[in-house]
Length: 113
Image 1 (cartoon, helix red, strand yellow):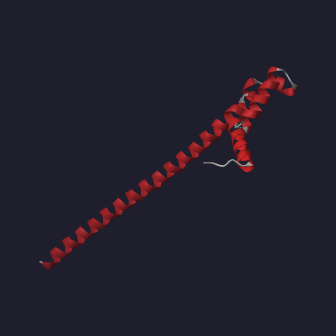
Image 2 (image 1 turned 120 degrees about the vertical axis):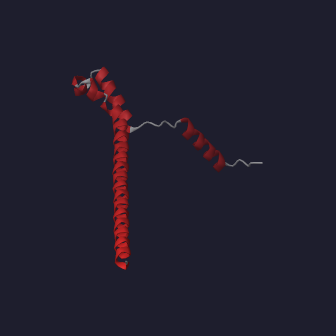
Image 3 (image 1 turned 135 degrees about the vertical axis):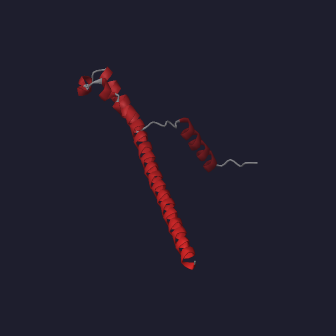
C-alpha cells in the first residue's frame, strides 16, 4: 500500500500540473501568431507588411528541416560517389595486376621452351 505524505502529494500535484499545462509551441509559431494578430488588427508597421512576410515564421521550421535533410542527402551522395570511385579503382587495379601476371606467365612459359 502506498503511503501518501506531504512530499508525495506535492510531487503528484506538480506532475499533474505539468501534464495539464504542457503546451509545446515553438518560438517561430509564437512570433507568427503575434505578427498575424498585429497584421489583422493593423498594429504598428506590421500592418503595412505583405502577408508572405507575416506568415514567414510559420515556414521557418519547415525550411530548417528541409535544409538539414538536404545536407544529409548531399553527404550521403558524396560518400556514395567516393565509395563508387574507390570500388572502380580497386577493380581496375586488380584487372591490371591480373593482366600483368598473365603476361609474365606467358613470357615465363615461352622462355622455358
